[in-house]
Image (cartoon, rainbow over all chains, first blue to last red):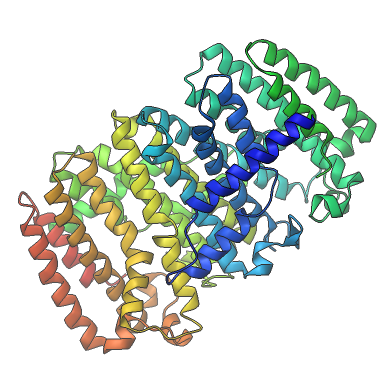
Length: 295
Length: 295
C-alpha cells in the first residue's frame, strides 16, 4: 500500500500538470469563467479515476502519458459534476476539498457555466488528435464517456438521488442509484485503459466486472465516511445523508453489514481480475485503497 | 421566401421526429430527468441550426438525413443552453417558446441536470457510427461542436453577457460577446455540412465568413425584437436587455443604425456565398429569413 500511495501521489501530480496545461489560462473577456473552471479542478483531489485509466491501461501496454490525457478528460467531467451537485438547488454544499464550493467562491451563474464548459472541454480533449492516432479509438472513448456522463449514467443517478429525498428507496433502487451516479464514470475509467490498449473482449468484460465492484465499494465507503468520517479529513460536509433521511447501503445494512458487503465485493473483484491475467496487483491494491480510505 | 418557409417547416418536422427518436423515452428510475429533457427540446423552435446543416450540406451532396442527425445534436446543445440561460441564477426567464421555462415546469435541480444530460447526449450522438461511417469525420464534428459549445464559444459568450450587467461594453466587446454566445454554434452548424461533405478548404473558409455574418445578423435581429418585438410572437419575455441596461448593437447604434448594419452584413454574406458557387440560393434566403423574422 505504501508503494501504491507513492504511485497515486505521483500520478496525481502528473494529472495536475496535465490539467494545468489543458485548462484555458485566466485571461480574455471571459477570464472569470476560466478562473472558476481552474478553481474547481486544480489543486486537489485523489485523482482516482485518472489513476484507474493508467492502471488498467498498463495491463495492455498503454503509455502512461496517453492514459493520463484520457484520465484528465474524465477528471474534468468529475469536476463539473461536483460543481453542479454542490449548487444550492442540488445538495447545497458549502465546502469541497476543504475550500468553499465553486458557487460560494464565485456565484451560482458562474458555477453553472464553469460546469458546462468543463463538460465541453472533456469532449474536446478526447476528440482531438493527441488523444490517440486512430480516430476510431477516439470515437469509442467519446461514446463511452458520453454514455457514462449522461442520462443513462451520472446525470441519471443524480436525478434518482435528488428524488430519494422525497421517497425511501429499497436496496435494489439504492444499488441502481449508485451504479449510475458513481459507478458509471469509475467503470468508464477502468474500461478506457482497455479501449486505448485494444484489449480482447474477455479482458474488457472482466475489467467491467471489476469496475462494477469497485464503483459500489467506493460509494459504500463514501457512505460509511458520511456516518463515521472526519470532516477535517474528507474536506466536505458530513452527516448530510442521515440528516436528509436518505437511504444508503449503510442505512439499510448498518455499518457492520456494509463492511461485510465490502469484503464480499473485494472477493468478487479479485475473481474478476484473475480472469484478466497480467500485472493486476495494482488494481487489487487500488481496491484496498478505496475501501480503507479516510477521505 | 414562401418556398424557404415550406422547406424550413418540413425540416423542422423531420428534426422533431429525429429528436423524438433520439431522446430517452420517459420511464425508468430517472423518468423525471427524461421528461424534462424532452419538454425542453421537443414541440417547437424554428430549428434554424439543423436547417443550416442541411442547407450547407446540400452544397456538397450530403444526404439530408445525415445532415439532420448532426443538426439534432446541435439542437440538443442549443436546447441545453436555453435551459441553463433561463435559470434564476442566470437570466431568470419565466417563459420560453410560449411555455413555462424548464425550471418552472419542473424545478431548478431537474433543469440543471436536464441541461447537463442533453449536452452529453449531443456528443453521444456524434460519436456513434450512424453519424458518419468515417470516424475521422465524426471526430472532426465532435471537436467542432465541443469548441463551439465551450469556454471559447457559447459558454464564454454567456459569461461575458452575465458580466455585462455590471459594466458597460463598447462595440468591440458587444461583437465579441455575440460572436461567442450565438455566433459559435451557428457557425458550427454551417461548417458541419462542409465537414460531412468533405468540402474543399476555400469553400469552408467562405462558409465560415457567411456564418459569421449570419450569426451577428441573427443576434442583431434578436436585439431588435427585444426592443420592438411582440411577446406573443416571440414566446419569451421581452425588453429585458433594456431593463437590465445591457449594451447591444441596437442600444449602441439605435434601431436605424442596427438595420443599416444588417444591410451591410447581408451584402457581405452574399459576397462570401459567391465564393462557394453551386446552389447557394438557399443560404441566401436563410439570411433574409433571419433578418426579417418576427420570432
